[in-house]
Each structure stands twice: as structure tokens, then as C-alpha cells.
Image (tube, helix red, strand yellow):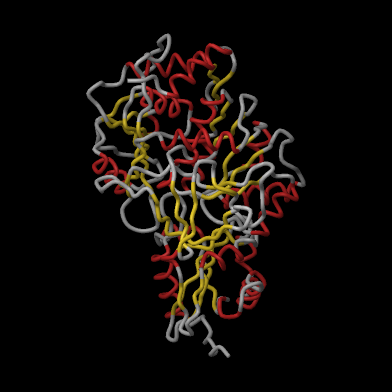
Length: 496
């Protein structure tokens, strides 16, 4: 048994400068020495017979301590997202075989019922993590866009490898102050909001209110949070970036001068949004990854950034393009899905992409989302959707093919800033907005109809996953029903 990397880093940072602040949230500030002592005590208090530990709670110092304690105790850790539905959480707990769930704050249980034995986070403090500590494994459940969540097994140090590689790529250091605004059960946030700060000795601030709103799909005043905390780095999803751009533009303000690195992932970033962000001085770096490859495969970075790409692969990962599909090989590839055979060393991602001569990766969409038009043309819906998302009035869009004869119709969900525009816009104005957004696309790929649904109605109709991703199958069904009832789509003329 060997001393784990996280335990060693905690002890080293405490010895190096124990009084330096390691973590903060709305309730407390924790020094490096206090963090190491709490992690050691909480690890010692974990039931030695429990092998698989769930963690449940909102973003906080307690969540980070629970994760680090379970890791240095060598447990298999399963984050239990608060934004999952009750059915998804129960499936996750049964499927992973969780022995015990560490609850970071009993108040987080008021609206939730959990079936597994619960274990309040220990308040015990010890001198240091035990010398026999080893890094635990991870099982990350992906909500996906359909079906039950699947468990991704990361038991061979994949997340720590990604943390080390991403820290180097982003120039993370002890001088950083990371602002955590995405839910910690999301693997990328777990890596950036816990692992990297511990490894490099940086400071992290957890804004639980913003993270909770992101998980619920309702975004708060992100500009105020950045102004108040003055961070150097953070991670966004495109919708959060769009909100930040809109709020800064409306107030005439700019981001804090301290800010040097904002990684954006989870979905394509519209070109117009990227340009608007950079014009405001937001240091945006788009990346690409998936849980099956420990979250990060490629990322733009200082000194190696190319517009329209998701950057170069992390050093140590090999990317091949085979029949337009992205294939990844390297130390971050998962061990496999839970209850299945080991994953192949060359992981076929199901994403389509290309590498330019300088090694920058470009994403073209997913194979299983391709639309084949009645005229034999393939259309990547993500291509059109990303174009439309460049308009600040649009919060989400899904391209579908409905009707007889089949034609392309787009479902539009207004952004928070676009709600008022859509409430008064005529059908002609909406069609014009879509036409302008897609003017760079060829005629055969442009939507011929548009259906607008409010975010509240979309949530009510079950069009979103619990972490805010649109479920394509449900969106297509909704569009089909609306188009059939209203006859709002136009007949597509045969292509010449």
C-alpha cells in the first residue's frame, strides 16, 4: 500500500504554509492545516467495512472534505447529484452498491429521501492523514440524454491523471483563486474545484447558491459573484457564459482584472458568443471531453488557442480520427461501465471531429444525432443549434425533422434575457431570427419552421435532464405534436 497523491499533497501544502487559506464558502474559511486535519479526522471516522461511499449535498467545504476523506481512506466514491430525480438517485444508489452515504449538511435532506444508511460528515480533526492512505476510486454517473444514468468506473487514477495534466495545461498554481459555480458531482468541477487546488496549493471558493441554480437550470447573478470574489479561474457551461456576457454587457462592466482562465465545456460554444466574451475581456478557453475519458480530452490554453477548435489533446493522450469518429487512447480512458467488461484501450467516443495540421481538434457533432433529409443530405443538428445559440435571446435550441414530407424544424427555448423579446415577437420576426442565425448554413440544412416553448413549460414537459441538457427524443416528440396540431411548419420545396 502506498501513500496517495491527494494525502501527500494535503500534508505537503499544510507543512509548506499551514496558515494560508485553502477553501472558503458562505459560512467559513479553512486554512491548509485545518483542511488537512479535518480530512484526516473524517477519513478515520469512516466505517472500515464500507467500501463504496456516496456523497450527497450542495457545493460547500463540507462536500470537498467528504470527498477528500473518502479518497485518502481508499474508498470507492460515488457522487450523488442533488439535481438528479428521486428515481435516478435511487437507481444510482442501488446500481453502485453504495454501503453508506455521507451527508454534508442535514438541511440538504429536507426535500430529498435517500434509501441508503446515512453518515453525517465527521467533525473530528486529526494531526494528518494516515500514512497508509491511498487514493480512492470513482464511479461517475452520467445522466445522458435518455434512459437511466450509467456508472463510469474510474478506479485506476484517471481523474488524478487528468487533474495533473489539466493543471499544467491551464498554468494552475498556488497563486490561483478558483471560483466553483458548477455542481461538484459533475466530474470536471470535481477535478477543477477540489483536486487541482489541493495538488497545486491554490485557493478555492464554493458558491453553493450559484451551483444549485445551475443544477436546477435557473441561473443567478453570476457577474456579481465574480465581482465579489475576484477569482483567477473558473469553469462554465455555454449557457452560463452567455448569461455572464449578457450581464456584463447590460451593466457596462468588465470581468475582474484577476481573471485569467475560464474553461468552457459541456456543449459547443457559438462563435458569436466566444467573440462577445473575448471583446468584454473574458479569457475563454473552450475544451472537449467526456466522463468515459475522465472529463478532459483536449483544451485550448494560453499560448495554444485557436478559434473554432476545442484545443489540442492533453499531453499523454492520443487522438485518432477514424471514419470521422474521434478515438481516444491514453491513461484517462475509463476502466469500463459498471457491471460490464473492461473498456477497450482505444475508446470510440461516438463524436465526429477532425484534427487540423497543427493538432487542434474540431468537433462536428455526434454520429447518433445525424439527420438524413428526404433528399439524401446529412445534417449535424449541433452545427445548426450552435449557430442559433449565438443569438443572446436563445437559451437552447434543438433541430428536429418532423412532418410528411419530413422537414427541419427547430425548437427554441428563450434565454432569460430573451424572454421579453419572444413574448412580443411575431411569427415572421421569429422566422427572420432563425434565418439570420443560420445564414452561413447551406439551404438544405436550414430550419423551415420554428416552435417556441418557455423554459418553464419545457421543464414541465420533461424536455430537460436534471442537469439541464435537452432530451432530444422528448424534444422531437414535443415538436412533432406541436407541428401536427398547429400546422405551423411550411412545406419544403424540393431541392434543385
